[in-house]
Length: 47
Image 1 (cartoon, rainbow, N blue to C red):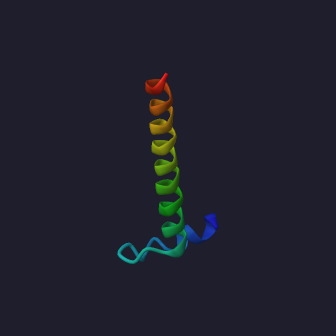
Image 2: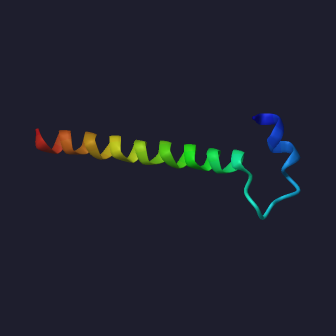
């Protein structure tokens, strides 16, 4: 997967599938982190 990202640098405008997967992975982790943070806040406020 890492080798294919170097050959796709010419296509800056069109995202490669690897870049899309990476963006989705990062966004997913960000959302999960936010949800966990909110759940922790809810737990502490309810106590």
